[in-house]
Image (tube, rainbow, N blue to C red):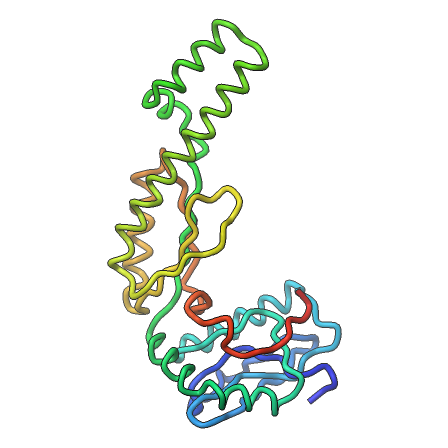
Length: 249
């Protein structure tokens, strides 16, 4: 172990082997090892000096989590989680072994899919045809062009586009939720009317993605859906999985 601490990638079942030839963050890439405690284990490496959120290291972290999740349930850690030493990691695993084991069981054969909804940007024609207020303000701006009329029209268009997207977002949430094991709302994202992650059975992930894509196509004049996945199940793991400091972010 180096003086820079122990970089923690994930928690897995203690009996699971690491993927062949898997490597960690840093340049050269760090050698991986496991710290076992009872029935669980932390996947770790020496923390590289001067750790930063470089693209190379972000991709290495993500790739390892994806490879781990291909082999079984994983409690993923966010990039940059560093513990002072192995004893700290082992002690925290022991303190929450029961909780971690239960979460690993819950995440068995599951992946995360994130769905974000934004107002459709190429839907002005359909909006004008549908919304009487927008149509009225457009006609006024044509009859009496000027700064104030243009501002009123622009504000009305933005509000109406967001309202239509929010309605579509509520609908897609209703349609997709029964296809998932669980949902987790994400943080507010500028420009988005919906940010939610779904816990989906690995065997059903293609069907889930197809349903979301079909919804997006049939509602493209009302909402833009952005799908990300399959992903490690970040949103379904407590932020208190293991107490470490965040480095390089």
